[in-house]
Amino acid sequence: MAVNPIIAEFDNNIKIKEYAQAYQIYDLRRGRSSGREWKSSVFFFLAVAMLFMLSMDNFNIVKNPVTAIVLMISMYMCTHYVYLLPKKAKLQGEHIYKSSRLLSKKYRFIIKRDYFEINNDYEFLKRYYTEIIDCIETNDTFILIGGMEHIVTVISKRCLTDEQIETISVFFKSEMIRVYRRSTYGSHLKKK
Amino acid sequence: MKKFSAEECFIVTEKDYVNMMNDVNQFRIPKENKIILRILGIIAVCCGTAAFINLRESIYQTICWIILIIIGFYVLSYYDVINPVQIKKQASKFYRYHSKMIKNAVTFQMNDELIHILSETHQLHLPKKYIHQIAECNHTILIFIDKNEFSFIPKRVVNDDDIRHLKNFADDKYIVI
Image (cartoon, rainbow over all chains, first blue to last red; front, side, top):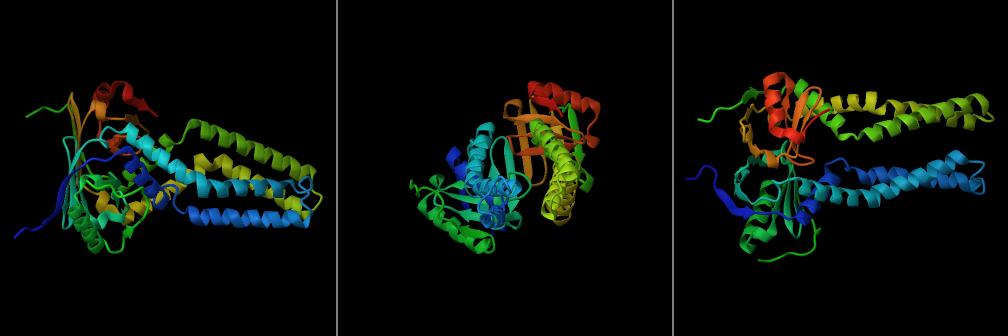
């Protein structure tokens, strides 16, 4: 009897767009850009309050310069968190992919009951599911976030058969109940 | 068996981890950001103080100038005082809660062709062309695989010979912070 049975075994090779998308999700959920919803809300309400204060004085900016400056800063920060930050995160993902020679390499990916392994000539990684803090399934990828090294691990659905996608999806859903999320993010499901 | 020009085995202590986080933070902050923030801080403090002395027509204005001075001091001391303290606090907390992940014994080996960084769960065998950059910081040596991902060696475990070998190995990819 196998101690730790293999759930799926395949060669994984990720492309720049897939990694950029995964990194964007990681950055917005767990990275430096996390918590943008409440941060943007704070600046939105600050902008509304400043607008209200200005309206009390007939929008006289000369008389209330500080209020006008705070209003402008709040509006900028709101736009920054809602619109600019996701774009920046995706761009950063692309930069990281381009700066790495390992990410574009083909990996042997082995998903076992208690952990998964990725392996090629230059790197070996064994990650237990207890280290995973987010498992997100998008239309194109499975994104596994967690651990100290190789924090964002991406499984491309291009490299999997339909049965494997189904098996892995069901397995992750049952194995990582609290951290598994299904997201509609991504272009479309590409079939082999 | 191939002979290694450098070989060290170590455990990452809490101090190593905190130092590493601080070094990474220092490495990632562009120097221009520090200069710009310092200039902005000085301007805010000077303007706030001048306005506080000369323009105090109402309580509302006085409060505004005091806030401006406080913001100025905050911005001025952000990268030198506030940020390192925040990082230290966060790193200590992270280490306490995730010590099982961090405490794996790490072996660092090096020969003329490859750098090996080996732990129970993660093993890297990197030729020079797969290394993005090696940065020698105050307390740690950071080996970057890409712009974001890195492995680190505390400086306490390496001697001058190891650093010299590393410098020769990385050549133009080696930088000192």
